[in-house]
Image (cartoon, rainbow, N blue to C red):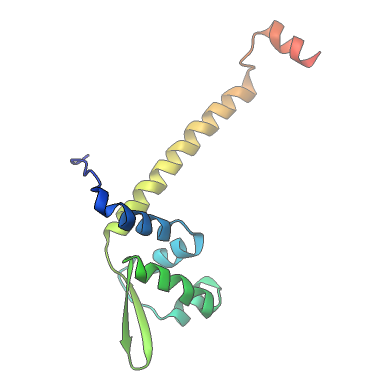
Length: 128
């Protein structure tokens, strides 16, 4: 793991805005759609995700304002692209962390269901 960067106090609002923009299911789905490096219109993204174009446009605006995606006008259409590939790196790290956590907690939960964490006498007393 590389050297850790300390968040400067003046950057905290910007970092918070970026992380808040990522903390929404529809926006994560939009980022996944744009992760291949291509560009898409709101209509194309809406069709891919089965959402209304209005919903997609609303979330793309938030992602654009937070600096996650770029917007380019061409021939009367708006085209969106992922601005910084570091966004995918961040999401990959979060997904890996969530998977590890789920494996750990499910292993722990499985252990609790196989055997009582209490002694046999205590377990019997609890059921009485």
